[in-house]
Image 1 (tube, helix red, strand yellow):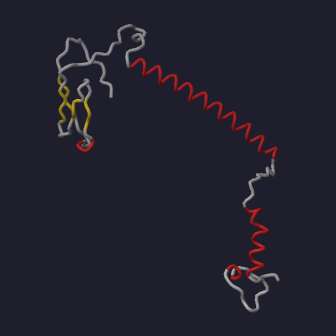
Image 2: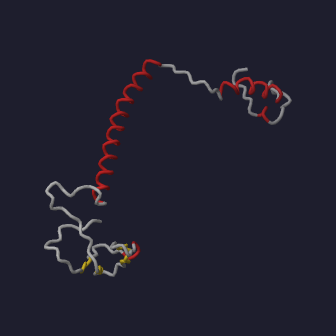
Image 3: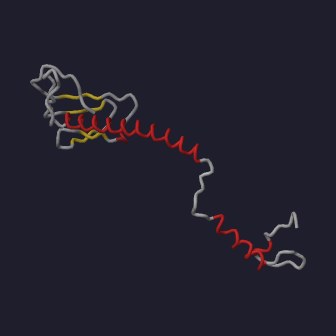
Length: 147
């Protein structure tokens, strides 16, 4: 019986095959439940516990980092929205410029959004493009433009 295949028995019987189709399906039903078992058997429980403990330490560090980053993002967002007090020096204050005009030296298209912001059409961007921003303001200095 060694070396006998049962592949043909799935579809049909051969005159001299030792395993007919009927026996093939009996054999398959016997082993079908062991192949698709719902029970997981931990063959190395000590190693699994050690690996899980190591994973939990790493996961706690990640969770802590994600929590800190979340707090920083919320704080920064509130700060940028002007819901927090100004910078520690008391000198930092956002000024939205009115009558702003933006031109691209290479033809990129800007569209005013009506709230003081502009949207750049991505299909018109060229590498090395430079922009000219023109406005009038009573501010003494311009120190940054948020992107």
